[in-house]
Length: 171
Ligand code: S3P
Image (tube, rainbow, N blue to C red; front, side):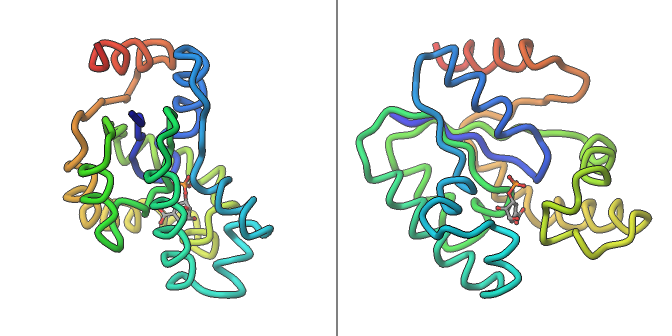
């Protein structure tokens, strides 16, 4: 069985995923890092040199590769993964439990403004445009995110509170 964490960029998928995996003594896979290792290039470089369509193709390919293996694992996806190539149905029909880490737009914008250089989709936006971009983008994406088995609201909660909630849903 795989525990899959879904959510917008900067929603805490990787941090929470790593901690949850440690707590459950399971291996942890961050899909972006998996892609970077396989392609020997950063996600930013893949976007820059080969474009987003190519990125979505390999993202789908590597997601399938991970889902097909019978490894028990905690898997954090990229923010866009559930929204392309029927990935969300693929996730839900594999042997998985999926969680959407739901974060407020304000919290996402605050974090993304500080971290935007690592995120090719927003790297070229001026700071005062990030809020509008995130609001629209999240509106388009939430239908996919909401297909997760559980929705965990993370606003104002500590890492350990979030992990406790995930654990309760896993019982
Ligand atoms: C993306 C999110 C990124 C990464 C890529 C595209 C997206 O992952 O996969 O830059 O479309 O939201 P994080 O959510 O880990 O930042």
